[in-house]
Amino acid sequence: MPTVDSVTMHEFLAGLERSRTVIVPCGSIEEHGPHLPLGTDTWHAVELAKAVSEKIFIWVAPPITYGLCRSSSNHPGTITIKGTTLRLFIQDILRGFYQQGLRRFLILSGHAGSTHMAMLVDACEELLLELHKGRFAVVSVNDLGRIAWKDIVETPSDSHAGEVETSVMEYLFPSYVKGRAPEEYPSFPPFLIVRNKRAFWKGGVWGNPGKASREKGKIIMERSVEALIEIIKSLEEEEPDGGS
Image (tube, rainbow, N blue to C red; front, top):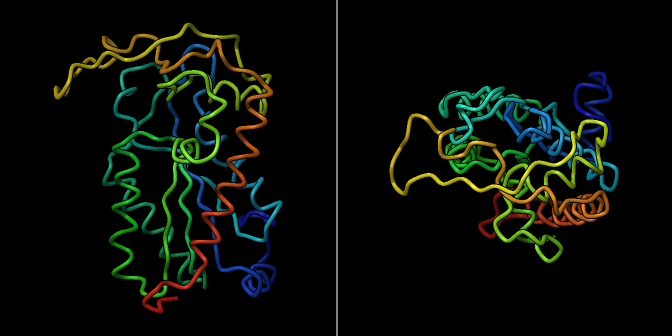
């Protein structure tokens, strides 16, 4: 399935006869340690969405490349936006797709920050009350991991620029991977909202990149695609109350 921005208006209209479901990849411009590029989250989500569209007929939207990055906001290269900006922006995009006839919306986020994800969920919760024929799902790549590939990851608390993301980038874009960073985990004090976040997370890695491999990246991608297809099947089912 071609991406939304690559079809003509007549091709778009014809495609609606086959699918009214769209994946909206979301990412970030965010540090990923000294070895991975700032666009890692976006590329991860985009490549997953494209891989799904090669197996089933589904629309893939152009990505949202900026996100809410709280913990990494002091690190070089991170460009964060406000939560309200993200929420309103995703709502406008989904309203636009809805107006054009799409009815099923899967927000796929390569960035899994808790506040970022909360804004995406909140945006869709509000749209449930407004777009009465719409159905919504919000999924991060870390959510997929809990479903699909936790058995192959050796690092128990791997979360950011560690074993998983380094493996995926090694598989997808090996020329962009600049070696390996040391294993690291943040040490933020509980409950406190700190100004100098980098003081508690110097290298920007959350996990162990040394455990990464291209082979793991391939398996992670393949299993993630399978998990996403199952989520899409659920999204496209009729709701118990008859909503459609």
